[in-house]
Image (cartoon, rainbow, N blue to C red; front, side):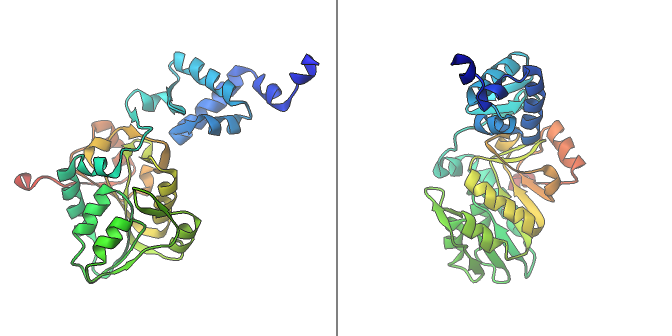
Length: 278
């Protein structure tokens, strides 16, 4: 009876030699930047209990870094910080507020005459929207309800997709919003996110990340807005790679390793200095 019970598909998968699983697991984590326990279990065809045991063993060998709910590759975890919990919108808005204002103003200055643009959710993109409030020569698509409300007071044409509303963040997401935005091409898209490493752009929200990826797919030019507190930070969802960016607007020079990675990806780095430094 016990022998038969041990021959279930999951048990047989769990009995694969750990060395074989280890290589697959490490490659999966490194390719994604971050991987959740459930994702790893599905990829390897083993139980989550087995995944947790493997992660503990690999971390003890210095081959990856365990996080809440998953793992990051060791080359990321030794130099970067993983953020598992998303701060409230108001807490993020107050953090580095002056830098975000400068970045938002610089981003608004890049919007071309007659352009059709996409504006993502986030505190820095909201600051950008404030600096576009008087522009009449552009069309604006956004899933950022706060930005749409602010811009609706101005002369520009503003389009808000349908879909599900994410509470507190006040972002529109879901299959309806994705389908609607995929009907359009944008001259420029302005993307916010929670972390930037040599592995790409990261964000807390799986739902909002789906929309960010649509903007990246459908825009001729991708502009990332990122204050320097986000350098070297990871979170659950990877938005995209550095190679998908055209311009990064920030408030300080990135660390050398990140700067080198951005230059290899041919990303133009714009630093929005304080007025006293310009």
